[in-house]
Amino acid sequence: ITNDLPPASAQIKDIMLIAAATRAAIRSRSGVAALSYLSGGSSSSSCLIGRRSEEPSPAPSSVRASAWRPRYFSSLPDNGGEDDGSDETPPESEADEADVPEVVPEVVPTAAAEDTPPPAKHAPESDLEHSLRPLEVVNYLNSHIVGQADAKRAVAIAMRNRWRRRQLPQDLMKEVTPRNVLMIGPTGCGKTEVARRMATLSEAPFIKVEATKFTEVGYHGRDVDQIVRDLMDISMTLTKKKQTEKLREEAKGLVEERILDLLTGPSSAGGADAGAGSSVTSSSRETFRNMLQGGQLDDQTVDVDVPVSQGDKSGGAGGEIVFGGEGNPNIAAMNEVISKLTAGGGPGGKRGVPTERKTLPISEARDVILDIELERLLETVDLKKEAVAAVEESGIVFMDEIDKICSSKDSMSKSADASAEGVQRDLLPLVEGTTISTKYGNVNTDYILFIASGAFHAVKPSDMLPELQGRLPIRVELNGLTEDDLYKILTEPVANLLRQQTELLATEGVTLKFEDDAVREIARMAALLNRTVENIGARRLHTVIERIMESISFEAAEMEEGSEIVVDKSLVNERLSEVMVSSDLSRYIL
Image (tube, rainbow, N blue to C red; front, side, top):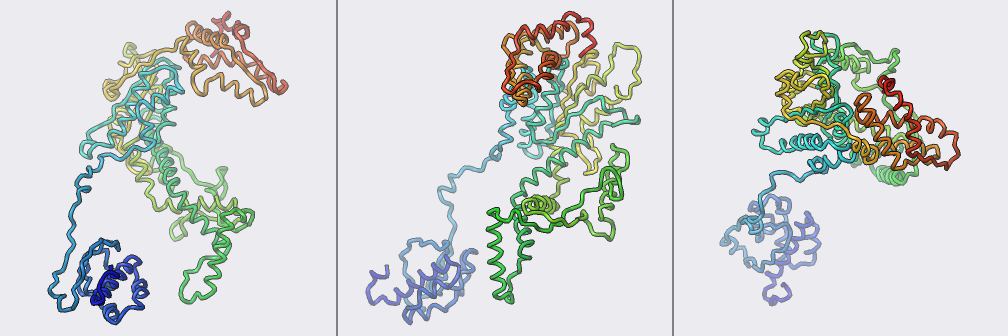
């Protein structure tokens, strides 16, 4: 533009040069660009360089650059150093400056901003949330469990509702309580396997307990409150693992600096008195850093302060003092205090775990220092608060064998078993919602999901306390296994029993093959034994297969490598003939 101006407009040309230099200075956030740009300017431009802006800058982002603006351009809006294409020329003299009104940039919403839709109510689903969709959960369970579609759907819906509840508004979320599930079915039909697979699928705190392990309050044994305390321990471990993964990259950077400090000494602050020694140290430090990252120093040994383990479990002077009373949170807290005191964290003493100095190669010291730095970073995270929130909002409790704490109403005699109806009464407030005291703090059980299961051979679900029945509103009946189901169990799951036996013998260099007729015969035999002896479901397959594989497994270690064994129908009948003939005696053998 300045080249097209007539010679008479020299002052305007100089002013526009200053404008270009000012914008360049704003981009570089220094005045060096302006000085270098105007070093060969005319006298009219040099008299304008030193002037500072007397008006306030129009935008907070231009505070640092406003000192380099000439007075003529103090009213121009700051657009971040970008040329707005304006061809307006400034006034030719200072006299005209007073007549120029100050231009205040006005923020006008653009059409794109008006057309932008409001932000979505929910954040995009993570990988875990996607995997917890009901269809995905059912497909995952199908790869490990045969049949029982109703139970799989009920569990999948219950787990998805946990996520749906967290998406509700805060006032409504408090009113939505989980719908607890009661699974009813004969033994060996897959109730416990559903719980086991749920634990691996969900990253939420999950615990599986046996109802028969608990006793009524006042009797010696574990009370039902211990369920929540054990769930809190699991949640603490899970929360610590999640936070560790988040902080691992930061800790790796600290590990590298710690190792460099051990090799070259601590890095200096680089003050004015450092002189040339600082640059030499920095140069050598970078050299060691490149060698460390390249793995050239892995065999170099360094002295590392390694934390001493928390005492020998076999006892001794450094051993951990543990009092009894597992179910008492007060005693658990006292044990924690005692362990800290024995570790050197008493009053007036130095807190923390005692350390000992060891000489380790860098390849081993890296992992040791990484654990130390992770523990140090985790001290800044409130793990207890996150763990309690995870249990209260996402905790899942699976109670197996709940029918064993029921007594038949048809029986006139009242049982004195401490693990009977008294445990049901203790479970009522736990399932309904109460506050349990743990060593990590108080835990509210209002929103914990409870899934109960039982065979109900000797008793009926109606024999449970009416209040407990009402707290388990969703009932799912699991079907007994037929011969076809047993055949599918042998062939369809990812880690079926036949594959397990094949892989075990493959370690000896022996190839094992099962013919389809043999597999059909195994399923038929197992179904027949379930009908004639005792129905133990899919567990019967373990009995049948072990009877067939007994001699093969014994002789496999003596066979030549590359041998092949084929299990056919005749071999199955031969090995199971004694069991089928003496069925009365097999009644007493699992």
